Image (cartoon, rainbow, N blue to C red):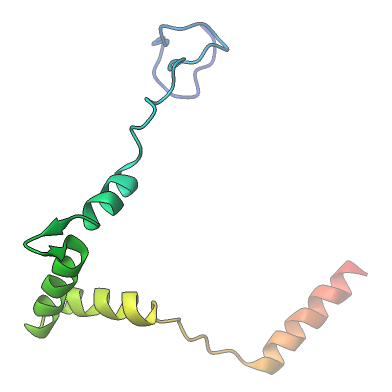
Length: 104
């Protein structure tokens, strides 16, 4: 038996080698979930956009003390917090010098 990297034993797809399992591809106009969500958020409900309703709901949750809602708001408004790195500059230069010496 030939080697099978998937570990499925002798299970083989119903198509020949080199032939795609989806010859027609995705249906045109089907789009992705992201596209569908973007379209939906532009729709109106009770005179306001769904995006505004979602934003207001998130703000209400944050005001109630929901830490996840607060984090989501802050990440969306200010961007995610960058991690601070502590480094000893002298150690970095020594490591660079050692690396350079090894390559010569």
